[in-house]
Each structure stands twice: as structure tokens, then as C-alpha cells.
Amino acid sequence: MTELALETRKPTGSAPARGRRANLGLAARYGVLVATVFLSIFPLLWLIVTSLRTTDEIFATPVELIPKSITLSQYVKVFSDYNMADYLQNSVVVSLATVVLVTVLALPAAYALARIRLPGVKIIVGVLLVMRMIPVIAFAIPLFAVFSSIGMLDSVWALILTHTAAKLPVAIWLLMAFIQDLPTEIEESAEIDGAGVVKRLVLVVAPLVGPGLAASAVLTFLFTWNDLLIALTLTFSEAAQTLPVGLTNFVTQFGIDWGPMSAAGVLMVIPTLLFVWFAQSYLVKGLVAGAVRG
Image (cartoon, rainbow, N blue to C red; front, side, top):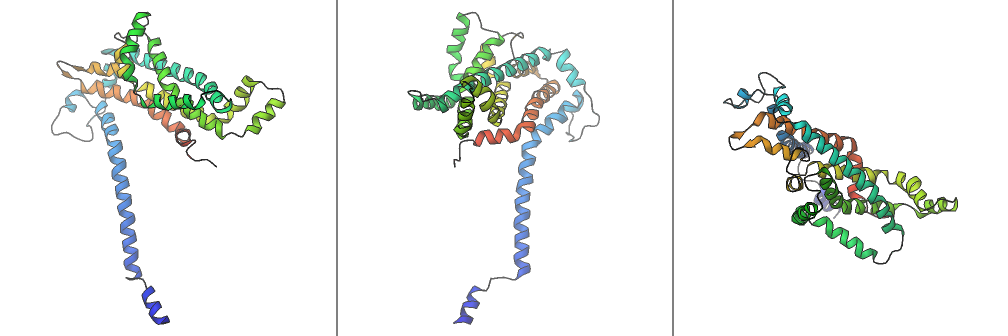
């Protein structure tokens, strides 16, 4: 019986064969990973390469992967022929102002919902979750009518207020998870030392939820920076339009100016890449905060 049991437990195939199968499986996984990464970054690489080509080389056939000569003329055209500086300035102002307003408003709101026993807290949190699921463009027509009636249409403040209202539910929801994870003993110690609610919030809670604030700021900046529909609906002049709207100027009835449009696309991608690169750890932590308790 013992010999029979040993025979039944004997692994099938030789050790070299099992090693080859393991190596093939590992190579296949790495191959899929490399292919996925390549497909993900290829559009960005092609955008950069196109922005560095001359106009004749962009339309040359057959298309060459590596440009024969590198030029910055397309970037010069972006600012000289299409006045992208104003669009870029508006995007920076709207995005940074929205980040500041959302952070200043979301932190005390999240603290109140997480720490203070308010009537109807569950209803408020449910409304926040519902607001996260409604696209902002659904409110475009009412917002257009409201800002038109108060004389704020076609202004950067219309965009700032709209994006602030749209991003607040996400920021509050994120910060609530961070604040609920904090031990209450820390705040109780500060209260014993004479710290009021505002002082505890600013000096104790805010530093401890720094990753949540960073994640909220990054998400707010990215969604505001990349917005097209709201800016296209609420603005109609260069004085208030942002960079995504400016990119539509490269498409006209006479054709598409691929060179400057690629250069403008690169300029638009750079800030988002920098934000994600420097805050990726905070962003991941902020997205998964509150998912696991204990």
C-alpha cells in the first residue's frame, strides 16, 4: 500500500519539463505586460514625435517612425498663430483656483460629517454618492441660464464655481474616509490642552490626513484641467476659454493642422503627467481609503 501511495503522489513529467513550462508561462506574462504598456504609451509617444516633425514630413508617405529632423516650429506656431498662451493661462487659473476652493471647503465639511453627530448624516452621505454618479454636463443648461442671468457667463469664475461644486462631493467622500480612520484619542488630547474645533482641524487633523488632501487635490486638478464640455458650454471668448477648448481651433472647415495640434496636445499632457508622477502614491492611497477597515 505504501509503494502504491508513493507512486500515486509522484509528479507527472520530469523536472526540466516543468521548468520549461514555468519559464514559458513567465515569458508569456511578461510579453502580455510589455504589449499592454506599449499600447498604452504609444499614442503619447506618437503625439510627441508628430509635434517634432516638419509639416512636410507629417504628410509624407510612407510614414517614418523616426523623424529625419527635429524641429520646434510647431510649438512656435502654437503661440504665434493660435494664441495658446491665453488658453493656457486660463486653464492654470481655473484648475488651481478650483483645487484651493475644493480643499478649503471639503476638509471642514468632511470633518463635520465624520465627527459631529448631525441629524440626517446618512442622507447627506447618500446624496454625496448620488452626486458623484451624475455627470456635470447634465447641469450644463441650468448652469448656462443661471450664469447668464447674473452676468457671469463667459468668465473664469463661472468655470471655477461650476468645477468646485462638481468636485466637492468626491473630495468630501475621500476625506471622510481618512478622518474616520484617525483615532479620536488624538483629538481628545488636543481638546484637553484647550484646542477648539478650528484649531484641532487645522493643527491636528489636516496634517494627519495629508495623503487624503493630496489625493483630493490631484483628482480635482486632473478632472478640471481636462474638462471640455463645461468650458465649451459656459464660455465663448478667448478671455475665459481653457486649453481643451483651444485645441478645437486646430480643426477647421479647411482641414486639421496636425503639427500645432500635436504640440498643443503635448503641452496639455505635461502638467497631468507631472501631477500623477509626483503624487501617485498619495493618489492610490486616496482612492482605496476606506475600502478596508480594521
